[in-house]
Length: 112
Length: 112
Image (cartoon, rainbow over all chains, first blue to last red; front, side, top):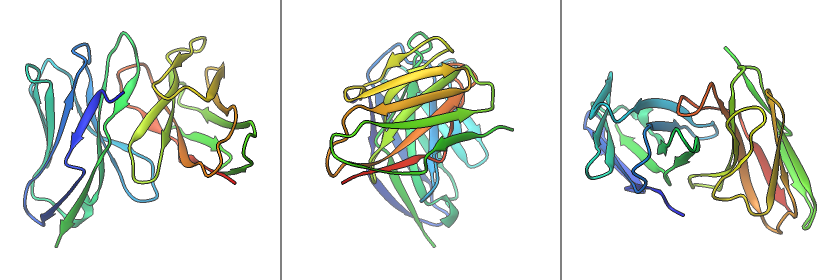
């Protein structure tokens, strides 16, 4: 039951470039869309999140773009740094159901 | 700050055995989750509990039971361990649904 789809599975960009990670969802009742990152050997941690009242959320070099009509959202990492290399998970949840569903993850590598 | 403590950190079980994983949080969070993460893959929701007396099945609940003993603790039981099963089970909590989720360090399960 794949309710949140993430692409690409892996992504390599050069240091200083913008990395773009994509997610789509099926359930129109979803109303909270976070991105988590996970470094090897560690647990996932929240990076940034958006609610559908906005179509853009920025936090430093990290920006979420949200398209409610197409049920898509993306994470843009500007000026990528080698320390950004990690696995990134998008997720979605619905307040009424309360469950948080994760995508399959994108393994991001930044080449110096 | 708070912490989510998962015990044990490593669990080796026999095929067919019933195994219990425990999770305690001192955030005073209402909502707790159990996820399974297979190597190099995403997080799949097994069970979650929105409030102290609530229990909900996730997409991967078959083969598992869960119990929210009190607000701070949430346990997961593998009802019959499958041979060659290897995964990390992550417990998580949030102050309420649709807010930031914090993860424990995980229990790594190996079934021989």
